Length: 88
Image 1 (cartoon, rainbow, N blue to C red):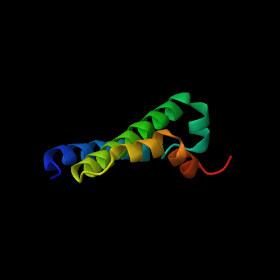
Image 2: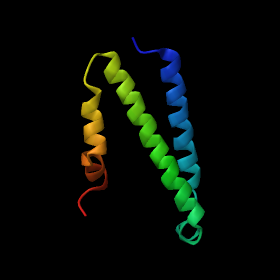
Image 3: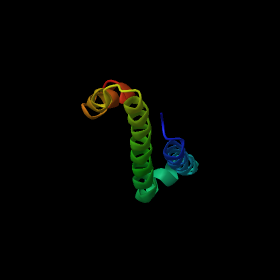
Image 4: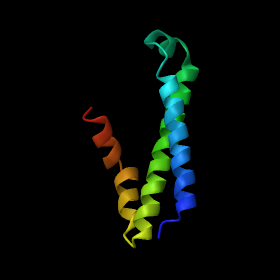
């Protein structure tokens, strides 16, 4: 069974990262380009949000006795990012 308290904390963390990204998304394009800190924070929060989502998925998969390395191989093997970012 999924530990509801752990899962809830991880969901809260993900929600927090997404909220921070939404606030950073309010910057205009000129602000974004002029201030490298906005880009750096956005990249970091996106990374943290992705890790939180992967952690939640791995927790759920492991609880069901499935193979967590499959998700890790897809994500860290680059398949996830290629699909997310599309062709170059």
